[in-house]
Structure formats: C-alpha cells, structure tokens
Length: 201
Ligand SMILES: [Zn+2]
Image 1: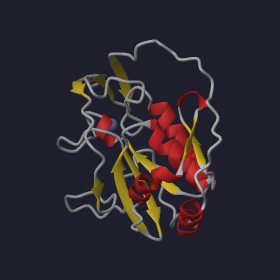
Image 2 (image 1 turned 90 degrees about the vertical axis):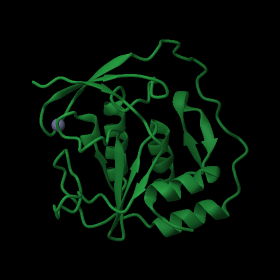
Image 3 (image 1 turned 135 degrees about the vertical axis):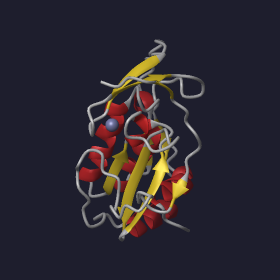
Image 4 (image 1 turned 180 degrees about the vertical axis):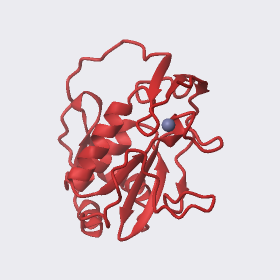
C-alpha cells in the first residue's frame, strides 16, 4: 500500500476542452469508478437556462437551521482510491482547510454527482487527482466532468455548493440550498452554472 504525503492544493476552477486524457490515449473520458460513459445528458439545458433567466429572483428564502457545527475540519484525511485501492494522506493547508476539501468530503461529492446522474445529467467525478498513484503530473484536485450534446467539459470543484447549485438548476428550482438547508437565489449563479456545464451565453 503506497502512502504519500500530499498537500491538497485547490486552484481556481479551470475549463479544459473535454475530459480527454492526454498522452496518446483515445479514451473518451477519465472514468475512475468504471461507471461508463452514457451518450449524453438527457436534460434540456437550454430550456432550463432560459427558464431561470426569465423568472424573477425569489424574495422569500428559508433561513435554514441555525445550528452551526463549530468543530474544526480535520487537518489530514486518508483518501482511498476506488480505481487502484491505494491510500493517499491529504494534509490540509489553507485555503483548502475546510469541510469541503475533496479528500475530506469525497463521499458527499460522490453522492451529489450520483444525484445529478439520476436527474439525467451525464456527469461524473474525476478523482484521479486525489490519488498519489493515479494522478498525472502535478494535477491534484477534484474534477467534475459533464457531457452535454456530445461535448464534455471538465472543471475543478471548489466546494460542495457548486454541485448543490447544479442539482437545484437541473430540478428547475429557483433557489438552491446550502449548508444547514439555507436557501439562496439561484439566478445570480447562472454564470457559474454555465461555466460548470460548458454552456456559453
Ligand atoms: Zn488510484
């Protein structure tokens, strides 16, 4: 079992042309969990974008439960790679020292992406950056891949809220629920939703 200290460095979300592996491989997408690629998303993204852009921003929002967990996030997390079974110890440094750090909250990230798949979005997580054995070069971090109309985009995930916003969007909601179920208007998130889905204005 290979163990290696890895500083989880979270960069800005980056947009790369497709989830295609470089280096001569012609695999359509990285698929660490062996989920297999489906043809494309069954969601009418254009219709949802138009609907959200046309609707007024809701003014009545639920405040959510005001019970904040004051516990500090863990300083290190052991990530077990589903592809190779290897373990990687992630040591948290600012700014990834939080409950949203991919290695800390990987189960939640997987659960939210699974929800998106159930909603008809051809989405998957690229976890290879979290595994010291599987990651390529210095590419650390957790990436979100989605295929819409045959086009695959890949973005780094910064927090769980990115996925929560997408779920609300695909469900046709006008608000998204963050931590403690607190509601936020979804309309101001349109640019980041477009970016995550790779859909231009
Ligand atoms: Zn691995």
